[in-house]
Amino acid sequence: MARKVIIDCDPGIDCAVALCMAVFEPELEVTAVTAVEGVVSADRASRNVQAIIEHLDPPRYPRIGAATPLETAPAVEYRHQYGDDGMGNVGLRVAELHHRRPSDKIICDEVRAAPEEVTLITLGPLTNVAHAFQRDPDLAGIVNRIIIMGGSVGGIGNVTAAAEFNMFYDPLSAQQVFRSPTTKTLIPLDVTRKVAITLSLVDQLPEETTAAGSLLHKVITFAFRYFHQKHGQESIFLHDVVALTAAVHPELFEMVEMAGDVETRGELTTGATVFDRRSNHVERANTEVAVNVDAAAVRDYIVRALRRAGDCTR
Ligand code: RIB
Image (cartoon, rainbow, N blue to C red; front, side, top):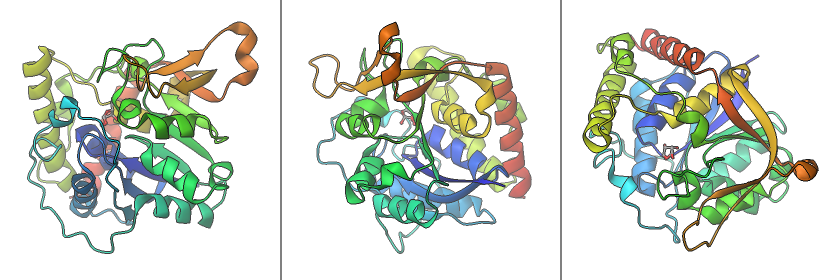
């Protein structure tokens, strides 16, 4: 039976690609897609989520949640890396937002409707999950699991020297989720960076005549151009896509139980994830952390999932 999941995301190119895979994945029943502010503003994240889902027009429509602006948001240059719309100026028709429901409310409703069955896959800052846990304090105990893209075990960040973007953008929420009793799986940068995606992916994408293919060709081509111009790199990282893969194929990842937390106010380290790996502290482990991955198998799965998205959107 397909697993019920909610995808919480801030699209963003890699979120957009992850959504293309998720909504046509037979192993998953995507009951909701909830927008969160992050690489794009709250309003843009909400519009992008709705525009992507309408463009893909999946057979089973997920509920859609709107993001709420984050008052404590830091200014980050990182935000503008993927064009004005955060998706490589793809020009998706920006849908009118109807029936705007806050993302955290939708998370509460969906988890309450199926206690212990719903997995949250978070591909952006943890704002909505923390708000949902505040709105309904018992919720953390009835979520099946949270799979979080974020953090760094080795301490090398991407938005600052020490912090990964999703943790840095809203460290208070991230800390709250880390300290919650929910079962957590973390897919950190150390592992997502092992899955370099090369230009050969472009040749394997679905035809541009399909709805998924037209979106994927535009956003992925933009990402290759950006990484090349900005970093001189021939390959790209699709962090969120690797995290989504962990939800479908956990056997491709090596996991270790660790005691993890998030720094909320360091002068240089705000948003850094800290793991206590002292051998005598293992009993305090609160998170399953990916430490290695079969990168070739993940890349194969990505191609299969994207081609399926093409087949479903002819
Ligand atoms: O640091 C990588 C994360 O930042 C990914 O979730 C990506 O979508 C961006 O939000």
